[in-house]
Length: 237
Image (cartoon, rainbow, N blue to C red; front, side, top):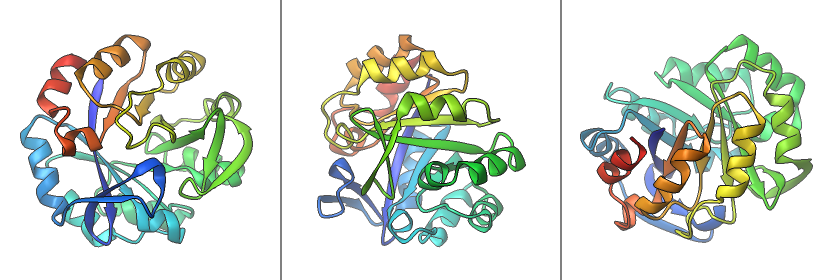
């Protein structure tokens, strides 16, 4: 199981939004590339980057900051946030991003998402964000009429790199991940599932390790000091 540290970007700063709410922001630093360097030094192989401005704008915004991170050449980087057209996908891949996360556009235009998944085989990740059992979109600001398992079953037929499952109610809250729903998803699909949201401490990593997920994204716990990346990696092994 990979442990993937997260950097959420807003105005080129490292931040965290509690439950995805833009008026509940915590700022952790103003040098995302240096933060990426520290994660690498602690043993990370992957980095999860969310362009929060992009999620709101509907197109990538913090591309200069993302380019500064990929230019380090230290980590494999996955990026999400406002990626809703082929041009944005190509631009991010050209910047050195390893895989691109698509959420909102996957739900609103599944035919387009299917074409992109086939065109960029193994480079597209489905960002499956849920409020209760329902899929949420547009930077978590809107709901949909589809359940997570229903939508995942459709997406599982595509050549995706992974599915990132985020329980919005847990995200940034340091209250523990939603083990039951994450496990149900991991068992329902063949695509690798990455858990996201709520991880607070080493015990959470140990609870996720046996349920069949390919990775776990950790964010606020690293910045708040309730978990170290080295301890998380050891527990995942």
